[in-house]
Length: 323
Ligand SMILES: Nc1ncnc2c1ncn2[C@@H]1O[C@H](COP(=O)(O)OP(=O)(O)OP(=O)(O)O)[C@@H](O)[C@H]1O
Image (cartoon, rainbow, N blue to C red; front, side, top):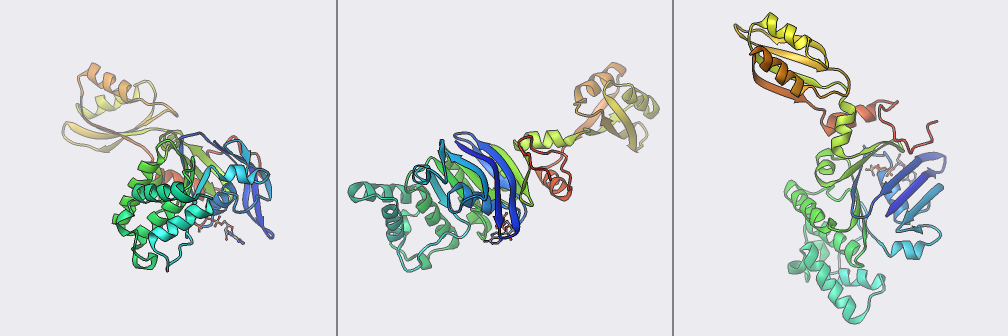
């Protein structure tokens, strides 16, 4: 549905995007994750046709966003980071104005405005001035403006930034509900937001795409060596020997010793999940596993690892500008 090929953007002599390639399937929610200044807003402005790339191509529903801008933009609803809302308009007047800008008239305009206000939950404040509603409601009005053309693609730039915790929960839930059959790209620098809302995550750092996968696969791929902490009942030396001889085990250390219960830390060979082997090996010897926990990197740790390492462990195969 959305395809970026080798997109580069220069602001004067500053390169903000360096060869970004991405593909977003119909119905997918993609999270664009990156620290401040990584290039998320620039990517979104280019996808929405708000500004052209310096080089590379963007297609939305098969249309080139530069050469077939009118056709491509019909598919897109865009919520910028700071949506331009007119404070002295009422909610309803502003949404109506947004519908008029999209070319709707008469009955159709009226019914779309009512429907979208209902969808984003602002019908009960429709006669209030925008300057008199909360930041959370203003964000809903911004969403109404993005949705009024019933777009198949929604581009949301940091949709929860500046909201209080309760408003954040509400807007996230609203986005989940709105996503439905739509294709969504949302940017964020908040990891739990991306992992809870998105099917796939693209991590951008310093204008480059450094990783792209499901939150789960990112975690698994970067896990490398699985580490397991175990508490086992049995003679310590015998348990240790038995753990060391279990297929797939690379090393074992003793974390704490007890009279007949000890804590061990077991490291597996790369890319192996050895929990079942450990279970059967201990059972065969009659040693009781009282606790077993596999350590898994959180998305937060992965993100930090990726953005702090210059040579990312996990580079996108589609990225071909590595200079
Ligand atoms: N109009 C502009 N002129 C010059 N440089 C710009 C312009 N807009 C963005 N930049 C620079 O391009 C880089 C990417 O900015 P961008 O706004 O896309 O990042 P971002 O990931 O969205 O960050 P933020 O969350 O802080 O907005 C930054 O270094 C920024 O300073």
